[in-house]
Length: 287
Image (tube, rainbow, N blue to C red):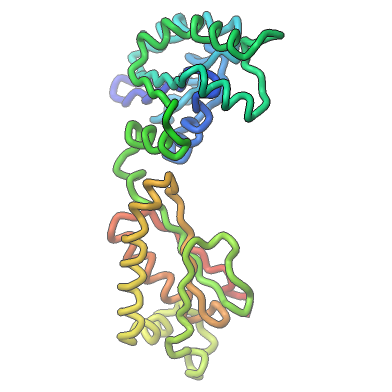
């Protein structure tokens, strides 16, 4: 790491088994962090040094590493010597809730051995007590759903980019079937079809001539404004539910003219409002 470079930001996800570490890790991954699960503590400095160019790294470290878990303080010391930015997030829940969750999953705790679940919980709390007392963030999931935990994690570690939806806009032809992964579908077959204009028929919606024809109708512009209104109405709800990737499909008869032009223009409108956007023309070339 050079003197002028920005040190990577590191989040250590740890805590009690059954408290929600996996949900937290999946949320961090959705937020764009590089996530590594169940890393032996002694490998933590090596991993961070190797991924120095990665600005945001989240590592799940817990008692699954068993005897190697004692090496965590030394690993932290090595990282602090390198001036890395480290945040420890400790996730816990009550004994009763952990027992319920583990019995539901039918999986033993890492330190349970041949004993009862409660004995495994006691051992784990004892081993993690020092780490919990020094954690930067403690999240008690006793009364939280998985969705609520994901929202708490997003509130702590999201940024301006992850506070917006990423929208994948897909153009398609209804004659080839609906995109199975579409969250929202719009039908633009009500617009005049360039197919019936001889000089436009061989071209696609990516052609300026076709785009100008389709978008030249007031109905097309009005419909795009209403589409935008639907996305902006739904976006806060999607984010509150932990959904940051949305697929929006725009269909015409064959997927060649109207849906393609409308998808390209709508993607521009979304981008201008700060959404992350990608465009896919599913059926272009299939006609």
